[in-house]
Image (cartoon, rainbow, N blue to C red; front, side, top):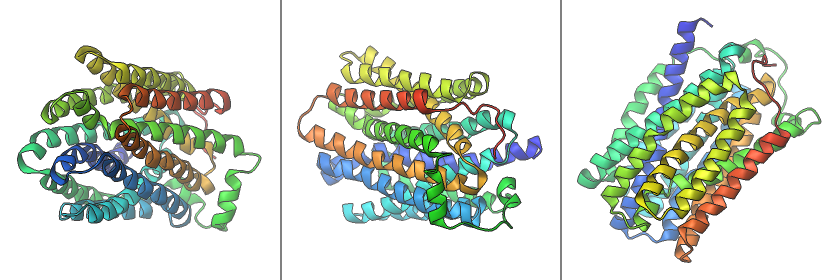
Length: 398
């Protein structure tokens, strides 16, 4: 691919990624608003985040398998369509049950899109640019979170959460229009005429002698990272309220913390080609763990803001490294399946994280204890990469 084509692909894929992030980011603010409007219990608040992750697990599994069958591009389009329609429809709901059903469908689209998008971009750029390009793709997530924080701050308190959801859904349809014109992955196109293996054969290959170590490592780190991310970030505005800040002030502080995601991505994009994937993942996960601990135990506004900014910086940089690293563990024939399965296992953690926080809050457990649990989870992920991971910097994809 030529450089201009790489930039175009990055822009089109990144726009969808950004709108997905807008939805997830906005959900954390909407949960805090719905608590007041619908009088939700902590358990019900936890279920909103968890049903989203259940959908993401199902979507990552189904659409990951489909990507190795019908191609990356088609799945790329289907997932964004599902997400856009579900997000727009959720603005029309007035009951928690209807909202949860639509959050499941939105989650399916989101969960399927992310691993397939990173796979498509990975297979479409040269080896020496691959890691940096995928991390830059992930950086659109920070842009989406930032837009979500701005919309939530200005729209939700004054005009309500439904208008915020409509605003997030409409631009995604434009990204859908742009995607129709992009080509499929050249690597997938090259093996298109080859004899197809069954879904069960592809799943079995992930645990063959050749790839079992890669699969085990990925499943551990994905579970730990997603468990801690959704447990911490979906509850971030609500945790700020628990620490004594008003809803508006908590939105302000989370907006400031969100700004730190961008330098987290950009430094990871630079380091990933210079020092390697393992270095970025281990260092940024360790930074995430320490930041989570200090955020949970912070007893002053200054320490809370500093640790919150560092939490955003390191956690999102680690996400960029993880999305670059995952597709590189498998050959083209099972890359969609392998990436999708790893993401699906991770989403199980995304189900448990928000639910556990809701349960712990209901049991009056201190915020410091909750964030210490997330600190330990991230440390386990860092150890898994350090011990089991293999460096893939500048390796040609099979």
